[in-house]
Image 1 (cartoon, rainbow, N blue to C red):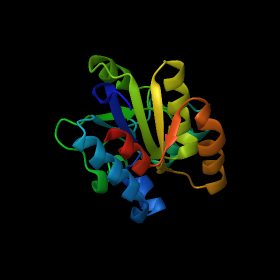
Image 2: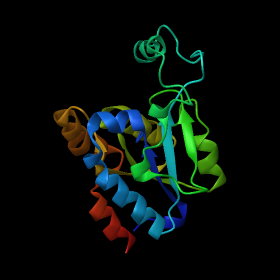
Image 3: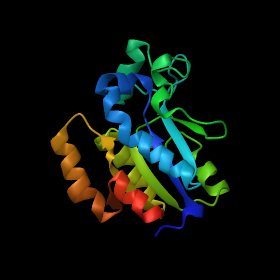
Image 4: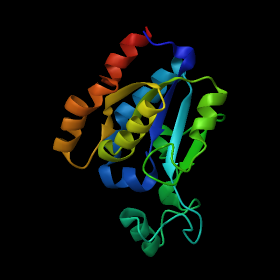
Length: 186
C-alpha cells in the first residue's frame, strides 16, 4: 500500500481541445480516479499544455510545437487549453502549465511536489505515448515512485497504448486500473 500522505494524482492534458477530439465518454476513468484521490486525501494536480501569446517558447526546430504556433491556438487564455469540466479542479487544486510534452518541462510541477513532500506520482493522461510516457520517464529519472492508471490513459493508437502499458511502463512503474488502484487505498 502506498504512503498516501506523500502521493499525488496527476491529471495530465485532460483539456477541452483534447477531450473534444477523443470523446467525453472516455473520461469516466479519469473522473473515478479524481474522486478516489479526493476521498483519500491524495492531492490532485492538473497539468495542461499552453503557450504565451506570440509563442516565444515554440522553437522553429521543434516539429510539433512550431506547427501549433502557425495555427494560432493553444495560448493560455484559449478555451481549448482549459481543464475539461468533467474533471473540474476544486479550489486549491493546482493547475500546472507546461511548455513541452513532459509535465515537468517548463513548469513549476517539481516545486509544488517538493513543497508538499510528494514522492509518489499516480499518472493519468492523454496521450499515453505523449505526456504519460514523457512524464513517467522524467519522474523515474527523478526517483519518484510511480503508478500508471492504465484505463485513465488514452492514446489515439490502441496498439501503442497496449505496448506501453503492458511492456514499457512496468519497467519503471506499477501499472494498475483505476479500480485496482482504489483497492490499494482501502
